[in-house]
Length: 163
Image 1 (cartoon, helix red, strand yellow):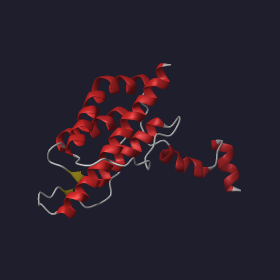
Image 2 (cartoon, helix red, strand yellow; image 1 turned 180 degrees about the vertical axis):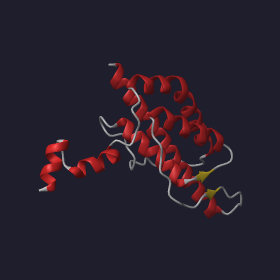
Image 3 (cartoon, rainbow, N blue to C red; image 1 turned 60 degrees about the horizontal axis):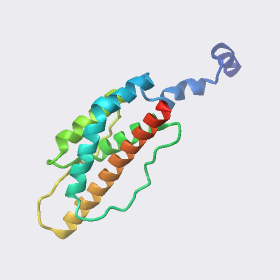
């Protein structure tokens, strides 16, 4: 009986009200605002970070399709990828400031924040251990792929809105 009451009063299931913030985690930024932020604030820094990472990698990275840009859900996809980078908490002193600023700028542009759980910080080890170097290269490859996917997703969003 209560369920019928809520459906009548609210016009949808009560569970829908509870899940609504999960489905739409980002703020109410306009498409124009996001595109302008990409053009003016995000486009160049994301390319710079991608280039810095590319120079650091000593091997060819395999394409990683675990994080892709979903059609018509570009903003949500970008948000998920940014949060994924932050959850990894990779620490590379050579470009950490640029990466941190870039991620915060993207979050501000989208109006989204990432909820971060407790996870270990992976600090860059400068030892000459070949196994450790291989792990670092693998992490850099994952980061490079995520940055490239974010860049691609922004470009899809931008081109979709322009045309």
